[in-house]
Length: 330
Image (cartoon, rainbow, N blue to C red):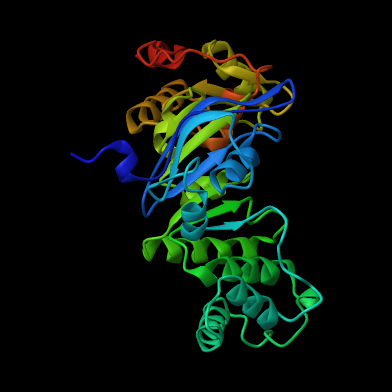
């Protein structure tokens, strides 16, 4: 029978880390299956980069059973380093030399024979659409090009596990989408990607599983859809241009949240076809005409703020509680 550790490209149990008297990681558990994208979310200062630094052997943990690529970080860090690649928040690209020279330098650091290093460099520069710019100083590259070069350099040693620490921060939308394509290609080749990001849509788009880190603890973990189901807050929004129609609807729908300035009502709803039909039937039966109806279901932004912002009270989800609309529409 395969154990969790054997099945995982990355396995951490009871990971703890303090800096002085500040506890940064308070006994967290992480398990990342091989060939998947695992995304770690959290506010600034939550400890995401510390996790990456520990798992990539850059700093030591205070406690925890940690295995990467099947190797124990405490007893065999060199084997871990041979299995991984790391792209940090800040580019490792040397701007004073060309893109090609950056790549060849990485090949030398991996002790590749000269011919092999040139072959790998040429293949990766082509794969990342950097062949034309290969002979130009990296300082002349755009932000997106530098990030592509950074990841290409990470791949010189053919790692099977890659840590990407906020790889698209500061990139324009087109460059971000290019990076997403690169990450998908890596995973299609069987590479495991451990991704930290501040962009919730990025985690939603790429990650097979997501963990939310806050105050040194994992406060939730699951697929994007599983996390979204943790959070209530779905609603239907009715917008009016006729103040009289707005007042009539607000009087009838006493559970709806009102915005008297914008003339909008928010009705708690799971967004199901049945509930939408009930709203439309009720509007028809009362003769009240809304100018716009929009449906909002919880997204990762809602999850993130609900789980990491202690100033926002967390609501309990009561799926069987009828709302005012259902009572009125009968």
